[in-house]
Image (cartoon, rainbow, N blue to C red; front, top):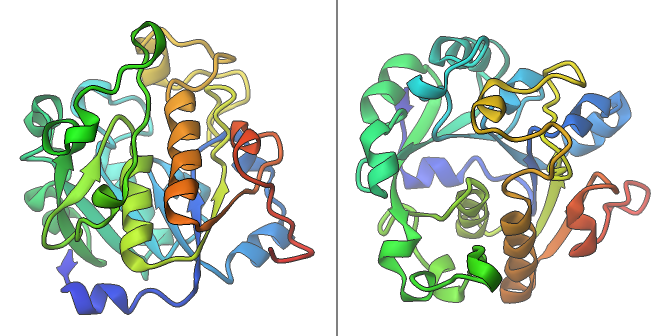
Length: 266
């Protein structure tokens, strides 16, 4: 990876809007017209969004292809080859988890060594901060019957991703929103962040992803991050005042943010 500095990284921003691409099954049904419309904005992909071949401005690398979770088609070699072929101009954001929670620091798949050896694109490496151990408001956030609640605050969002580190809590979307805040996007459009099931766009409709099966989750069960992600997005909107939209009108996010209207451009 061609490691760049903060100034070079910021030059990749060319829009006031960021499109956040998830991996929900609705990605499979995006039309050429919709893809073209969304391409006018900056964008970020993560996890296995690269399998869509929809190029993005940024690509966030975190826990993909952890060895114990590896299944067919989900390996570091597949990821690096897909990014090389379809994302040659994308800026990579590699998450160094060496100082994160004990769980993640042990595996730290895309820390300095992997990131610099496998990829040829421009990119940066950011230190991950595990919110629960660093920010007081995260330490006792159990909801009804012990279920997690998301927490987001101005203090968290004021962390400089280069100087202070990148905030992580429970799911990757925390990091994505921190990056979007750091770069100063006013509008965020969530595409393929469906949350109502565990279907993924690159698999046949009735096929479970390997890790989903290992974890004992059902295909039609709500995504295991659904509650947290919905709360996170709702709280982010409230705290920041930014304009957030879901592109999929059926996404569980619809109860918290409006659906994006291409005809209006929102």
